Length: 265
Image 1 (tube, rainbow, N blue to C red):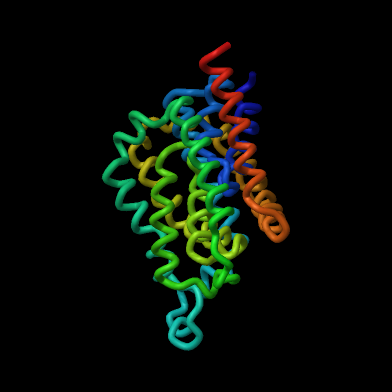
Image 2: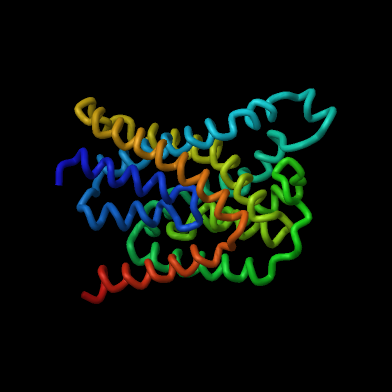
C-alpha cells in the first residue's frame, strides 16, 4: 500500500480515537501492526499527527483557553482556570516522566494493548454503575479537588489501551461530574498534556526526521485534525443521551478480535 494512503488511514484512526474512550495509542499500535507501518519513521509520524488532534481541541475550545489566561476573570467570577488544568495534569505528568522509558520499552505491544482495552472497558462499566448523581454539570463549575482526583485517574492512561479520555471520564463520574462535563474537562486538559508529551518525544527523535517525508506527515496531520474535530462534536452530542457502555462493549469486541488475529490464527 502506498505510504500516502497509510498516512490517511493512520490519520483517521488517530482522529477518531484520540478523544473517544477507546484508546488512540492502542488503536495506533494495532493499526501499525496490521499495515506493517512500524519502526522509527512510523513512531515519529504517530507523534507528529497527534499535534493535529490537539489543534482541533484548541479550535473548539479557544474561548475557554483564552478565558483561563485572564486572571481578572478568575478573581471576579471563578470558573475553569489554569489552576484546574494544572491540577488535572500534574499527577500523570509526574508519573509519566518517571516511568517514560519502561512504558515505551515494555508496554507498547499488541498484548498489553489488549489487556488495557479490557481493563479500561471494565472501569467504564463500573463507573456508570457506581457513579453518584452529578453535582457538577458544567465544566466551568468543576472544583480544584475534582480536577485533581480526575487527574489521578488519568495516570491509568499511561498503560496503552486504557485510554486517556476513558480513564478521566470514568474518574469524573466517580467524583460527581456529568458525562459532558467530564468529557469536556478531559478534552481541555489533553491540550497541554499532549503538547508537552509530543514535543518531548519529538525532541528525542528530531534527528530521525526526513525532509522527504513532509508530504506524508502533512497528510496525516490534516486528516487527524479534521477527523478529531468531527469526532469531538459527535461524541458530546452522544453523551447527552447515552452512556459509556457502548464504548466498553466495543473495547471488549476489539480486544477479542485482536487476540485472535495476533495470537490464535
